[in-house]
Length: 443
Image (tube, rainbow, N blue to C red; front, side, top):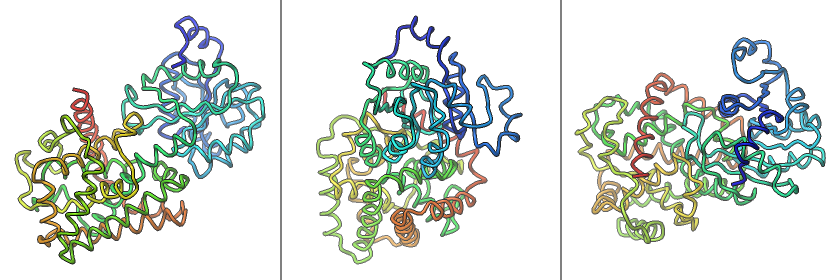
């Protein structure tokens, strides 16, 4: 970590200006955090929205200006917090206005297209140090992974010292990577888990099911609470956050395709009563992913029992064994792709740690995997929703393979509108659940 001394940081704050281009959720988080910490921050959003947003930001600690030219000309560290689909166009527009000798970075979840845009459009004197906070805007930044990529500085660490000093107010855990290392790790830790949650939400929408409202006890219990709360958490955010990772990262394509293939093949084994083949495949996946696991599980079912959107009695669990196709598919995907999820824990998002935790619980709790396999083979009560889940996973895989941001947005917003009435309650409950889980993991 290259954070300056308290004296250096105090001097930086007198002399340096931080620029934020794009005031979406994460851009606004950065602008507020930096300005509250005493940094001089200049920020803008889309130029055509300047008049309508002036009142909204008039009382902010940061200075709100008309466009990225006004940000770029005065800022010593400029962060592009924009949609991945538009990064090249926006850098082409504002990059040439960058202050001489400035440092430029971005917040996109896939760094290769971002770096290519910087190299293509920025003047040669501009340094490139880019960042990625591995969490959403509603998560406390303290203790969360923060990737820093020093791609082009060549000044014996002076620029990195300034960037690290600015970021230090987030109180995050710095992880220094290259562009390609970052993209491989984010694909490994996010692509499959996002595909699972997106597919769950789509399956419930296609079935017209609000699982928390159902009197059917199949949706009761801690693991079901995780699925419901985290799926709604994703759909309460903006679609481009997930589209950027899935579509612009080639390694994510392979993983999302494998997830669709895994859930399809596992479901086919279930409906064809091939219990022995299903068991053999899942035990191989268990050995590969969890074979070296020691110590306590990341979480357990009882820890999550209180977090039901439907207000169910925490003591009430499902009396129907669940096929847990979404979880089986994640672990099978890791096995098929040769990914060890524990290799990247230092860069893991809160959602990844939660889903790894419930996967651990399913595969390592004595007798639970066997019960799940039996349910998948013999119990038809989940067949309908599992079929919709398979269809949904294949749909998301197709959208990503077509590299269509328009299709991604339409599908995402269709599901989003179905669940929208529950977002305020889901966000509040989800925040409490994540806090409990992360505290449990630290203890």
